[in-house]
Length: 292
Image 1 (cartoon, helix red, strand yellow):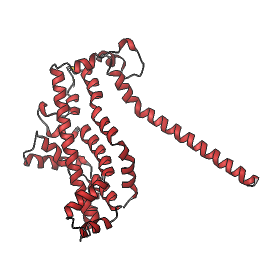
Image 2 (cartoon, one colour):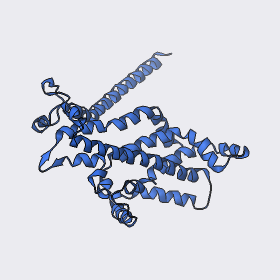
Image 3 (cartoon, one colour):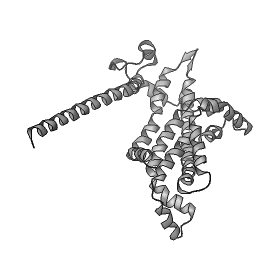
Image 4 (cartoon, one colour):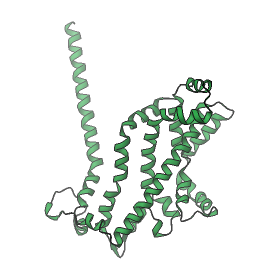
């Protein structure tokens, strides 16, 4: 290697090192910005509600004001605790049913759009994608009138049914499935497999990364949803967790002790889902982004 080539190589390595340092620093700052409110909320959950009113969210570790009283009160079985876990149960039911049904309905729609050739296929897919450009606020009133006509107001079904055919989930599944070799279908048909058997026993197991990625996103969206459930659900015994916690803030008094501790405990289901399926997330997202 000549002196010029050696110098160029060292310059290239130096630039790469600087780029790595800058990139790492940028993402470290970004992570700190994202983690700050969660960490501040966690610390606030160990302090009395009066401290939150007096000082607001803070990351100062003042152990003299920190205790487990908020969580003890949350699990004490009193009236507030019973209401909280009723809302928690409602959110769990709606989230689990919604995620399972949405994933399988969108999978079969995407399977048909990616694995079969038929007249109008591209037009149908275009119409699915076009719905992604329509804000939910525009669809809200027609959907609400539809739910009233179906007599589904103040029911779990009324909350769940409007999101079962999710355009972004269909798009993601189609992109993932389009990257799978069509020879799998031909080989299965030669072996005598039915079309339903091919979709459920051969292709579906290969789509586990896509199911995991979309499952986490769907679970997060459903668990944190507040606008549509607020429109449909009328009785306090049917409220989901975000709506229920919001009712703790009133002009006549704010129950910050339950609100902050309950909010932190409400993160737990999504965190557990993420830990279980995290190994599939990057694989599924990458495949869905580049295939098709």
